[in-house]
Length: 340
Ligand SMILES: Cc1ncc(COP(=O)(O)O)c(C=O)c1O
Image (cartoon, rainbow, N blue to C red; front, top):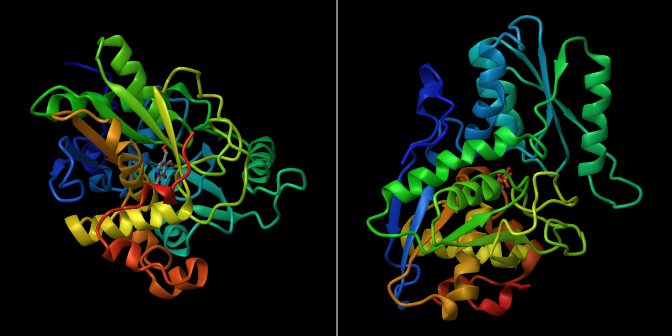
């Protein structure tokens, strides 16, 4: 099957074509098969490398973005910022990234190492008490103030979604059989929309399960503070459309944590919080998945970005108490996660 690919040169040529591996242990007692799409294998360490490349490459090649003149400005909690920082470094573009205090220090250090300028907003929005609206306002101010500034606007940019038609094509091409279930962590809705678009266009008989954060507004949950960044959004993104997902599972912070810790314990995969959420979502839907079904979980990023949170025992006990038995016990208790 063919699909649109933003193909870069040099290190950017290694964006995409990530491994699809079978996980035989995490759902060992279930009659279906589980595969993980390891997006950590992208050169910037996450699925957002695909979006960054797709949103910038065309504009660089057609001369809209000019090295030494244009300035890319974007709001990111980390992964997109790193992806954009890498693409901008490669092409010699100035990049200003607006983050909030929830962005982890390692991600900010990586962006800076690529040469990005990072601005941290410190106040939450007085109405929603969230950082995201403040970050978006600050991006608009910077775009208005900086000559030749360009904001890719991942939440509304159709190229963000288009990039993931390739992700879905790789999944379909890489599976030994038909794709029956896709568990897709969701934030800007780029990944969800791109995968769904590909599935519809090719008439695939796949059930797409959006994995959202409890307390995220994407699918109508009441926004509330969350500890683990990555998936979820406090505002419904413009890329969202009704009907993209066949099903939605909301996973709370503890569900993410337990999913991640079980993943590393059973499969030796050190993955980020939204990957743990995908693992938790499968556990929640376990009884509904038919025997023999092929389930693919997209694992958006790597666990190294969560060493001082999810994989730090002191952070875990400070935020959740004594919960280690939840992953040492084997089965993930679906009651840990709230579902809609
Ligand atoms: C770790 C992680 N998981 C999931 C997502 C959701 O992807 P999307 O923005 O395509 O919905 C993101 C997006 O930044 C992410 O960084």
